[in-house]
Length: 284
Image (cartoon, rainbow, N blue to C red; front, top):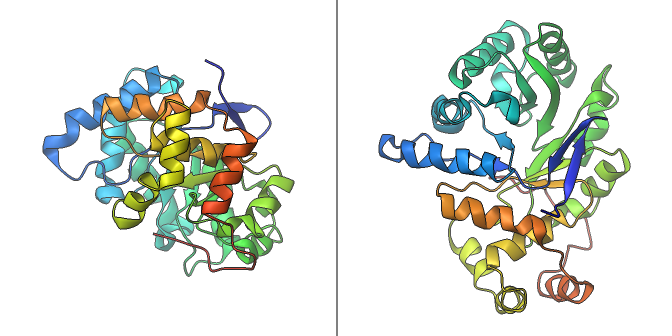
């Protein structure tokens, strides 16, 4: 497979599409299918799996734990800590609880889920302590905007932030104004959550947009593959779509082999232009 990759730190090279798990673990009847989808994704090379203590109150981490059982070393495991747990002993307890649910002794990349009341310096100290204890590999953040990142890198140890995970898709391009270029300059990967937009009218509008559908037809691909290929054509960007069926996982993996032409990119840019000024960071 000719695929796009993203490098975390100086050594970890991963395919530019991973697997998200938001909304997994919420219905017991879906568990077998969700586990099977994640395992299929690993087999297809989508080895980064992203989860969080928030998702289904830990239920998604339990699904991931079942999916990676017996093949932990094939997977780059990402989880996230609630802002109100992101400091001191609460942070250590939260990480240990995630480890138990995941059935592992380490999380490869541990993220602050969004900014809360703990000072960034205290969260960095927590991350450093978890690293010293061998509970996590790298650490990063999620849902932090440009100004937050400027503050973070001024904190002792803050420059070692490995990633920023933010909402990013064709119809939500605000990060291109300042945050994405800055992260690229720092060689800090950006993880795009909801790269197909969240379920609902916006997602339907994206999937059924005539330009997206026409490009999909030209490439003998699905609209979802076009949207994923668009996200990951940006340097240093990894998309983490959720797929709860083997069919959708295979579709996502197929987008790694797509290279959109300059003309296709121009058409998408004209249909969904990036904002020409600073906008509030989109979050869901």
